[in-house]
Length: 82
Image (cartoon, rainbow, N blue to C red; front, side):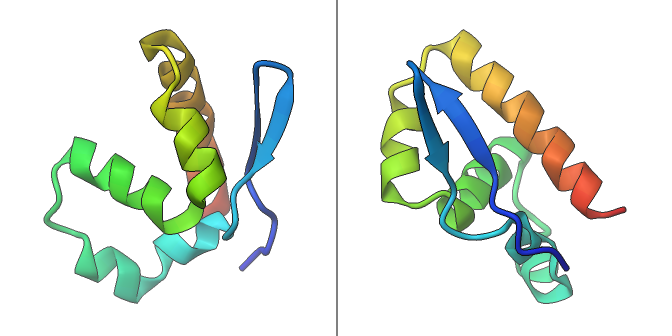
């Protein structure tokens, strides 16, 4: 497992998640969340790792900004499985 924290930029500021993405890929976490639909799972992941400051920024993103962040986050999660 890695302890690297996910970071993203928004409006010229850099934000760092409070917990590593590895938190959401442990067998126990995956088992506990296996029945969530895609949208619920996406926000459950964010709530598990982002922290209040990053969540506030994410909540106020435009749909295009959020889509770009979601793409990067999805890539980071997939990379952590390798």
